[in-house]
Amino acid sequence: MSERLRTRISVELVPRNAESICAEVAAVAEHLPDVDTINVPDLMKFDLRSWDACALARSHPRPPGRAAYRAVPHIRSTDLDPASALPMVAALDAAGIDEVLVVAGDAPTDFSRRTYDVDAVAAVQRLRRDLPHVQVYAGLDPYRQSLVREIEYAERKLEAGAVGFFTQPFFDTALMAAWAALLPQGVPVWWGATTVTSPGSLTYWRQRNRVAFPSGFEPSLDWHRDFARQAVAFAREQGQHIYLMPVRASVRDYLEGIV
Image (tube, rainbow, N blue to C red):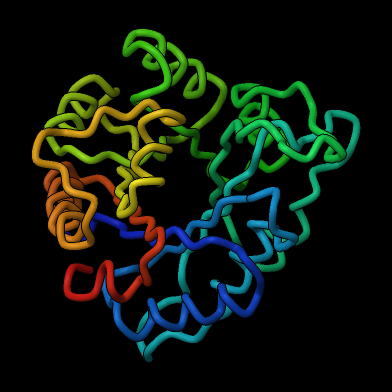
């Protein structure tokens, strides 16, 4: 089997509401034929939970001969009450979802929302114990701390039962290659790319996510479309996967003709 056939391509969609998810999945189905997976973050400002949005994506019809979309909901570790049952079990089983991504999640800005002192490693362990039929991915962030600390953190997630990683979005294939050389061989990686096309979002990524953008970076859709092509090619060369996250751009404007 070729590298191209082994590589899965996902689009990350924001779960604003059921209507928006259905409309964006329809656009993916119509215009982005190489996409086979949808991944969805779990965002505190929206009522639609990631696993319910993924169930909607799974149910969307695709052209004849194409299987239903695979779907990967994000699960925030700090939302998991150690004293209560996992809230997403029924939805995952009903929709046939067998992959999830564990993330720590941002601190809540609404302090009426209850969170718990559960880190990503503990969340991976619990999900692997309570949902043994589900593959659990973990996050990999090349920006938040030193390289050595992030590698050690990644190794602890693997020891806890994670099968692989979803990275924070990259903006430089040279940095992607450097990280690829450091990660264990054979561990699935979903490399990420996104769009940063406004001064405000550029500041956010620099200050909040601590990203150092490469020389030649431009906050334009053309630059990001070109980088998406490079990132998809990199994932295919590595025999790995890629997810693409449009922000302030439609999935069609960002990715049509690329995937």
